[in-house]
Length: 289
Ligand SMILES: NC(=O)c1ccc[n+]([C@@H]2O[C@H](COP(=O)([O-])OP(=O)(O)OC[C@H]3O[C@@H](n4cnc5c(N)ncnc54)[C@H](OP(=O)(O)O)[C@@H]3O)[C@@H](O)[C@H]2O)c1
Image (cartoon, rainbow, N blue to C red; front, top):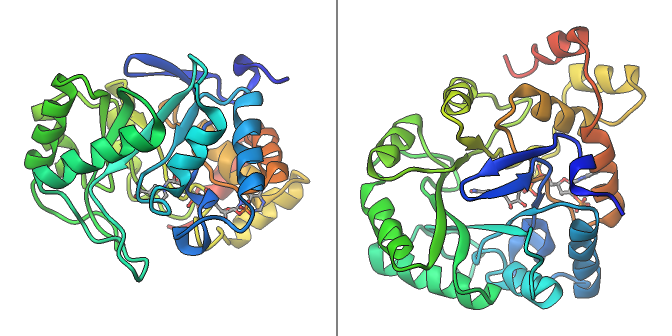
């Protein structure tokens, strides 16, 4: 069995816990377009068992995945949870019958979502709740205050241990931090989408984690000539290079790549440990510019 410390990237202090920088995003365990159950629930459970056995201690989920599907798979497979396991979830959106992600951010919506996450995951307090803003198009301007204040109340009631934000603008990060300490920002970021470069550096200097979603491109796998060139020179895959690049990009970056495949999970762990040289980094730096 791989131990925690042997995972690439080592560990990071996320609020009141220590997690492996190599984590796991559970969204891909639900059915197509993150709706309904997976075709093979036992295969999904096998991936979750492997995640824990390989030493990963950070799982990212949401009750909107399925909806409820990934949270229930996590509880059925891993509960009672190992002491070291940290499960991050997010609130701020529901699902509609067409598979859309309508925003749901009124205080009563957020309270309901927190209680649904507690029930589905089978815990008395959630390790981390991210206040998710924005929509399918990405972050949208607007105040995050009402949502953060509601989550702070739920934290004071003992239902949440740590708070973060997701799908946010840099201004919303600043506003959230005037209301309460946050332990992470979870936004879309990868080799080809580097809009948060300045934000990542700022958060790093303040000891706040940055958790990129879609590290491999999400529903559209990352494609770039420079990435393919570097991968073939290093005799590896573009995914390995993309994950290794993120780990090397900044010490506050935590990985949550998604996969429904035990083989890909192992490949991604091995790949993320790749050492990229200054030449590789310079070539990769040309992507998306
Ligand atoms: N906060 C937000 O608004 C938000 C939005 C989206 C996602 N998220 C979180 O971010 C996590 C990561 O995002 P994601 O899972 O959508 O995207 P991702 O990690 O960028 O990519 C996942 C895709 O890559 C494939 N893949 C993974 N490893 C591979 C490998 N070694 N070889 C070939 N294909 C591979 C997966 O297919 P296989 O299943 O076949 O491996 C899957 O289709 C999610 O799980 C979720 O927890 C958050």
